[in-house]
Image (cartoon, rainbow, N blue to C red; front, side, top):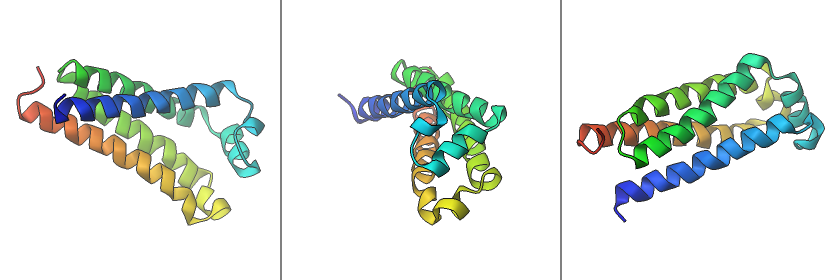
Length: 134
């Protein structure tokens, strides 16, 4: 398996995990989602932030599949996923104030997610520039 394919498979697995987390969180009661602060964050999350979360996970998963299939649309889908990630976490950080409630450590996982979303977009764009995507 080429490095390109290994990265694409890893991105697919990562995005499938994100999609599974989204589905689980949508179907759960807020109090089932962790500590009281996390439960409150999910209970008060506005529809636009839930929508951004859905866009981030669905677009990321479809982008990874498109990447595996060698489709250029993967670039746009990964960018859309990144925008969704940034929008969703902007509410958690600025709208809800998660850092003030949980401390700076609350930024660790959102940062990893945003970096991986950005990496997916970069990887797809690089692959397209190298002619690996049609």
